Each structure stands twice: as structure tokens, then as C-alpha cells.
Image (cartoon, rainbow, N blue to C red; front, side, top):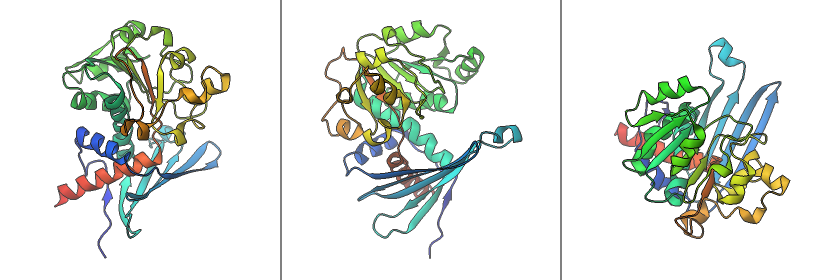
Length: 307
């Protein structure tokens, strides 16, 4: 029996265009069956997410979330993903969850931008200064060559420290002014109240929302939802699960029909930007099917590097 590889953070390197193309192609295959499970012990959580896509395989990613770990010098989130062969059902790999999430989260937004942003987009604003923000900084130039990047964070020192690592990145102090200059705005925060206001947006922009992942989180306001053509990465994993979409639906600010499609519709050409003046809004929810698609690319790269 062949040894099942464990793929950690230092075991694989991907090219962003390769991942984005694999995710696009993956959304031309049948829609997945998806299941999420949560177990709790006080403030601690075990999250298990599973996806089965006929023709692609099965993935089950389980992570523990222990908020008190950082005080002990330990990561708050730890876990791994099992990747199963589609034909035989055999386990093909165990992949560290941080590796999957790193590539999946940014790849999700890159695919959304490649399908929705104007092709002539020349300036990106990254809102946030954490690991996802840094991933966006390194990834966007691979899909939008020559793009200029500005970064804003509530803690200006963190934005300046991150910008200093990259010659093409500039930290900016005025968020509203930076939004006005940007062609693409990508938010990667932990906000529970809007950071980007709809009245700041102008014609032709693309707003990519990454940070909100719970029912009580959102990064933009109702006005942005009303002004934009709204899309999500997956209808099944966002509309009833993420505050960014749930709150404006519950208040009546938007209706279900105002959500014009997801990556399956966008990849098939059944939905998308209709005019250069459209404001497009994309909610990155990061479902388990994206973990599966990303895991397959990671495994292929690992095998190629090991050959």
C-alpha cells in the first residue's frame, strides 16, 4: 500500500494563474454536495466541512478553534484536510488546513475578480493587514499585471509594516480617498460593522468582500448592496450563513433576486458584469467545495515536486 503523504506549509508551491484556472474549470463540473458540522466545548469549537463533487472527489477538512490558545503560545486554529480519490474512495493525502486555507481564500477572490472586475483595472486597495491581506498583495499582480496596490488598516503601523515588505505597495491613511482611487477593493478584516460605505463607491469598481464569515459579521453596508450587482462564490454556503448577505436580506434592503449568481453561473457565462460602469460586489464565503478543488491542485503540485 502506497504511503499517504502529509502535505505541510513548506511542502508545496503553486502558481496563482494555475490555481485560478483550476478553480474556474472546477466550476464547470457538477455542483457539490456540502455539509458543515460544528461541535462546541465552551468557547472552543470543532468545525468539520465536507464536499463531494462527482468526478473530482471528496474532501473533509476539520479544524479546532481554541480562542485561548494564543495566550499559551499556540495557534488558535489547527487542523487538516483528508482528500479522497473520486473513483476508488481511497485517501490520497492529508493536507495541513493552513495550507489549504491560504491558497483557497485568495484564489477564491482572484477568480471572482478575474470574472467580474474590469480587465483594465489598474489599482487595488487592500483593506486589512493580516495574512490574507499579504496573500492578496502577492497574488493580484499574477492576474492583473502591473497593478498598483495601496493598503489601509485601522492600525496604521501594521499597514506600513506590511507595505514596507513590497516595493509596489503603499500604505495610505485616508480610507475614503483610497476607495475613490481604487478599481478593485478587497477587504480582509474581522469587522462586525461596515468598513466600506456604499456612498463611497464609483462606477466601474469591483468590491471583493472576504472577511465576514459568521452571521454577525459584515464589511460593507446596505447602500453598497443596493448600488452593486451582487454575486457570491456559492449560493449554498453564503446566503443563509454569512451576515454580509443575511443582514440586508433580513432588513429588506435587498431581495433574494438581487443576488445575481455564484461562481458556477459566472464560470459558465450565465451571469456577470454587463457594463464597464457597473459596480460589482463579490462575497467570498469559501465553502468546502473550494477546499476540495484547491486540495487537488496542491496534491498535483506536491506530486510534481516529488517526482
